[in-house]
Image 1 (cartoon, helix red, strand yellow):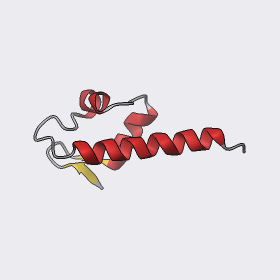
Image 2 (spheres, rainbow, N blue to C red):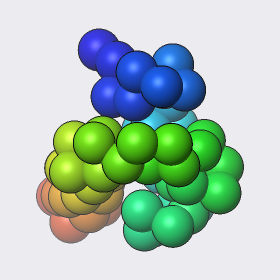
Image 3 (cartoon, rainbow, N blue to C red):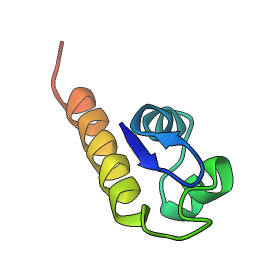
Length: 64
């Protein structure tokens, strides 16, 4: 799903950026230019990022 239409950024790219260490909207902006043009994608990008971080934290907390 596209998160940022202006820069053709998908939710998969946001998740990949999180996997590579992005932890803030500023990090996403620097690596993917999310919210760098019109800014309308900021909320969606932040939501995808926070959800993916939460999923990672849950996976680490649950023993295999």
